[in-house]
Image (tube, rainbow, N blue to C red; front, side):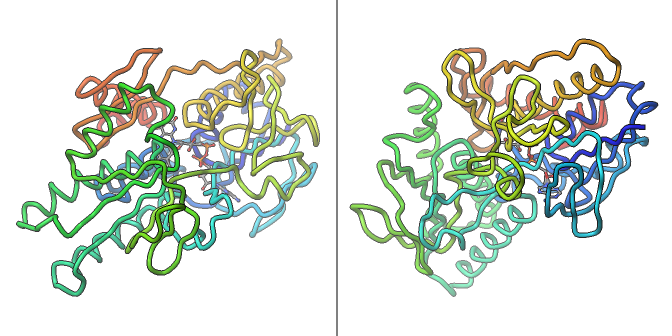
Length: 384
Ligand SMILES: Cc1cc2nc3c(=O)[nH]c(=O)nc-3n(C[C@H](O)[C@H](O)[C@H](O)COP(=O)(O)OP(=O)(O)OC[C@H]3O[C@@H](n4cnc5c(N)ncnc54)[C@H](O)[C@@H]3O)c2cc1C
């Protein structure tokens, strides 16, 4: 029996596990290692931070994987050429699939290590606790004003600010809570938010956020964070009671300390999802894999979409390798993306077409439900 080890139960790792065919289990022993017992829908973590969603974005891993897959909760600390080390033991493999996901990238900004971020479920819960604790202090007049600073106007920053503004209005508004003392401010270094979309989409998103009371500061480069807030180049200090970093992610730092040639926690992979360096039997997928678009020569952005496609494709590669069939090459099909701005509005671009409003909200729901369905079948469609 061959030993297949998969590290990381995110979109990429679970898409791989779900794609394995029946005959693999007669030829290989498959072990999935993850540093906690649950999977979280990372693309929905802004909803945890804002209070829009609760446990509906987490899944008990043992309940959603094939019973023949051995599941181990362990924290991997070192990757060798034919073994990995984790806090609770050493694991040997014939094939290793690495899908360790993302970490925050602060680009060396002084003090930003202390900022909150959407790095995982627990970190997102910590943001929610901090926000609602501070709102209580505001209600009890322990503080006069609350500045929530969202550093970065990309997809996750806009989704967080939009969701938070909507939730606070809906939940706290019922208690006649006055919002004029709560400021949600997006700080963006570029001339506009959501740089991946064209100007019509950006304009709509800006207008919706402003209608929700979110303030947007563009052309604003953050150069420092301290206990009082942040410092912006050519502007000065901005008070930040809660500072949340959403302006950048990199791959997993474990990758930089292993046998791979890597850059910011990511390794370039070929069309068989193997790194160019290190050894043949290691595959790398998801946010830690850098895969080049042949036409432009540029690397694709790390997203849940490419992570899922890589995981599903790698299952085909392993099914073929162990079944002696022809191993297929990976290519990425970018179907576009949708950015939610609270639960009532969204913008995006799908298959090259700009989308807005209710239609975009429905498209976002379809994307989210598709993943729920992949994990739990019809039961997943009933999740909130
Ligand atoms: C707020 C937000 C919104 C987003 N929206 C979108 C969107 O609309 N569309 C889109 O395509 N993408 C979106 N993304 C990006 C997307 O979430 C990531 O690209 C995706 O999660 C990457 O999947 P992955 O499987 O590589 O890693 P992850 O989903 O990060 O999974 C990695 C797994 O590995 C585990 N792990 C890490 N280190 C170890 C270790 N040492 N030992 C054991 N286990 C370990 C982690 O616990 C985790 O379970 C969004 C991200 C955020 C934060």
